[in-house]
Image (cartoon, rainbow, N blue to C red; front, side, top):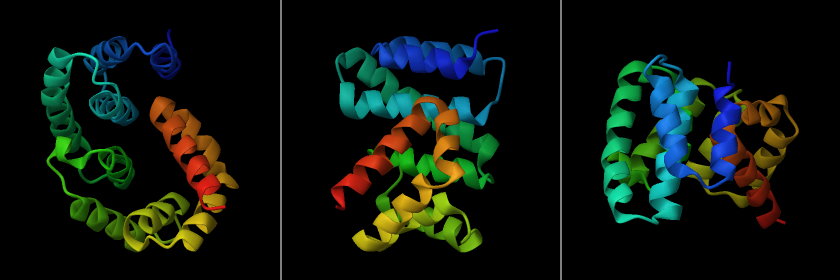
Length: 174
């Protein structure tokens, strides 16, 4: 059996955005795996924000990301992990999901209040709500020096993107 995470990473590393989308959509016909939905949302968003190499696919993915978000949210709307990762994904261009930055800040604040001990939620709260560079650096280090950082790699391309963002953010605060 093919490991879907590795397959998506392989395609993503080859800039095969369409292949990533089609592969995950096919896998989701047989599964409601939250990580698959989150990676599909991330790949859609990545394409819409950073790639944009084909107007037809841009329009298609602009529509499909909203459908995917609605479908996943119907299933996982009460899952705090889902909400956290959606905030990270949406922060790239929240309007593609019909959200605002105020929505994302409110979600992160809610997560932090519910789970103040969660390192990732604390990091997200600091990033989205506090904008305190010193505190953000502390939280970047806390994530990097914890098991959470390694666990992010198990999230496929979404997790790798988060790892890279945290490492970049830490280097920018030096």
